[in-house]
Length: 80
View 1 (cartoon, rainbow, N blue to C red):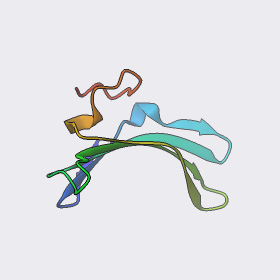
View 2 (tube, rainbow, N blue to C red):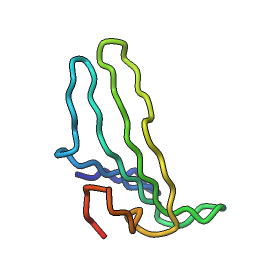
View 3 (cartoon, rainbow, N blue to C red):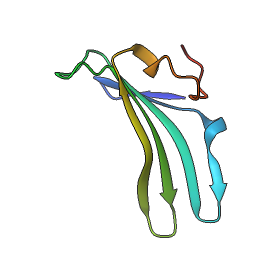
View 4 (tube, rainbow, N blue to C red):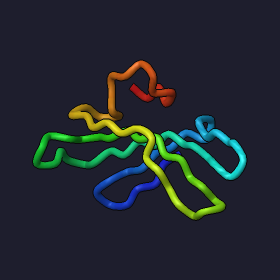
């Protein structure tokens, strides 16, 4: 699933949503239309959401000069 916010498109795969009590985890991909000043075009993240405490925590983050944050074998959204 994706959402375009103008300069960045955000994607997440509903199949990657994990549930455990009040916690939810999701893998997230963001792709910019153009590279930023450091050469980053896309990023991949894994977030944990706590609905009870209304907070979010970043579990993993990586940035990439390639589209779709590729290549990376453990990213389940095989969009490469």
